[in-house]
Length: 402
Ligand code: C5P
Image (tube, rainbow, N blue to C red; front, side, top):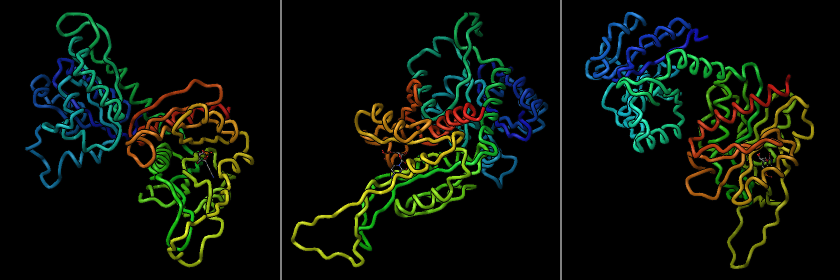
């Protein structure tokens, strides 16, 4: 269940924080190791000793009173944790997390923590529904923070409404689902193409595009995290090889085609995230071309289509996922491409807006499957989208393998 998992439990000062003791106990019982990080106000409501008794670990509450002064405590804790669960989360802590304010133990840990964060809000209905809270929720959701609850029921004030912290069992369930999904690609083989290609005009010049490779690399990393064996065939990017991924660096579309097709037998899943140049200069000059006052014509030859060629030979149990970068008629063009290239899924990308899509940190996509309803995702960090895309891919794969 949660055997061997490291859970960081953030506790802020809602009256529901006594329930966090029960949550710590449930995590512990499910096999996880738990470390509690509290705000000082929460420590006035529930004695840290209670959490220490349940978890067997010291509680981290005072950022200026480290037990291990040779370590930067919040960074050491951030490295240790597999998941950060803030329960209960007050409107105050949600606001601080959204704004990046780090003035107590849990809010200092949050921006240092590189993996998934869950929050279980607990507050009065008016506070939950207030536009300030709702805006902060939207910011956190966009960033990939997962919300459990709040639930509707009796509140601390005696009123009945939305705002009750989700029951500890429900929070446990959400975290267990998350880890179960983590192994959704265990033992599967995944091939990802990513990045642009460069097509030589002469020894120093080339034709290329704005692709940074970030989306494909994020997918490769996420697939490894979910237990897959991943090969990444990448065009030139500035990104380091993702850990745990077999990365094959290529420059041209022809090289990418050769390397990907040579490995097309084994994968259960192909993800064609590369922005392959459609054309290459027909006869690149061997010497650097001289500048002349004349107009110049460059003859281009079409490049092979990697996705199409793999799709032609693919077995029925292999899952093919394509990308489609468009500036207009996004869904229509993506559906056409999906049909032509026999994709099981296509991730349609609107590359017309600044700061989103090609080369950017954020992406906004529509996920399409044959006959399926379009699913809009983002704008969100590419890492977050990678996870959502792989949820869908795992679903399609499981249907195919049944
Ligand atoms: O036709 P279009 O280039 O828009 O198709 C996009 C999809 O096909 C992407 O998944 C892309 O990685 C893949 N593709 C490819 N080889 C090409 C061109 C596109 O694999 N030469």
